[in-house]
Length: 340
Picture 1 (tube, rainbow, N blue to C red):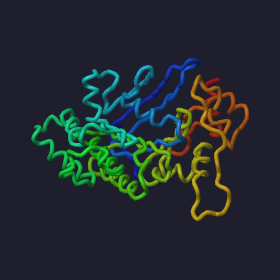
Picture 2: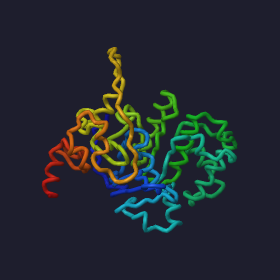
Picture 3: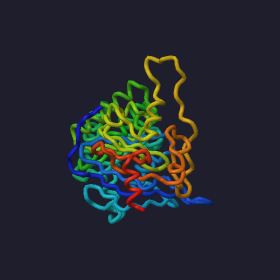
Picture 4: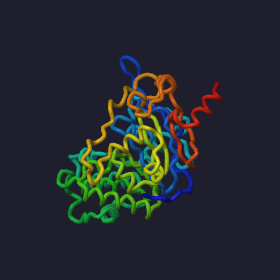
């Protein structure tokens, strides 16, 4: 686990991000008031069960939510520039130029009808105008070498001719093609890989951060990946952030019951012979506005009516830099007393 405290400038500033999909009844609120402040060179993990809204946050930031989905935010700024105020042409240059994304499934992220070299050249034409067409092949080979792939004689090959691990590395090379890249969004980049290739990809991401000072937002459900790679962690549940802490603080003293129960679900080694802990219930429906704490029906630390009737706010707690949305913490009682 990292103990580094990142004090560089904020490169991605997101405040009260909301993503809503219309439905036949009540609209589905996939993301509810999520705020992120990511500093240069920092790796932030976004964790939670499937359906908690992690991937939707990344797609919303990058502008990949298509109608009828609606995205709104009080602030959505990259390196101090408000993305909502940019023209469509500016956004095309920004996406892939200053902020880029690694998708979960490398096989379906490439066009099967185009060679790897041709797909790479499209990116270079848009984001590397300093290069002439004659220089494209040399630059592609250089970028592939940086992710551990010898591309000589392979640029005319098609995606199906590469292994899944190779395609994931190629996708990282494509995502990092721009010299102006500041933020890399990674959506479950190691989910489909075996443990050996996973370790290599994680080391590659760590090296890219070290060499280029990239900020990285990593979506994953694998807490061991978070422990190995991240500096700070945000825990999501039902479209909301329920806890934010340094990676050391989160694993040492988890504060939110959902985080505590997630950590209890991790199998211990060596196995003690006891039945593995399983969190009861499932992720709630995301339609309508929450009446109480969305985690209340599954919580092992349920307090009663206050949890059922009043949604807790994400508030700072005594531990520096940590925020928790739980009625068990004194900050909630103080906030409720002030609001009355």
